[in-house]
Length: 126
Image (cartoon, rainbow, N blue to C red):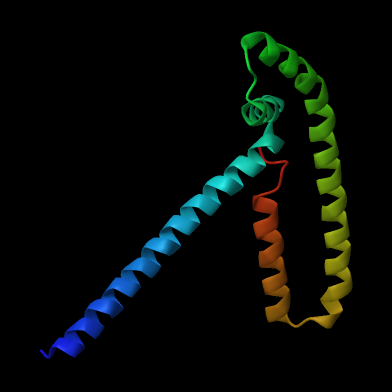
């Protein structure tokens, strides 16, 4: 094999390996970030824990005081998020009803698949 072809082939293989590794690392990081971001919605304790971790209290006394404030706030925030989610779902359901006469079967199926994916990751899941 001539040296120029061998070098080009080696460069191409290296590029492909780099692209695959980059994609794997990106998807791993994105998935972790998404899971951490949605974790606070599920329970009051996870809401509190996520904020305590973000604040990084200086000592146990400060952590206890922070937790008191967060425990009072958590139910309100989770309630608002769920109410908001319910309102969004109602609006999307109304939108689907309005779109139905405008779309063909294939388009309706794609729209329904999108709604199904959205419902599977909604904050009301526990």
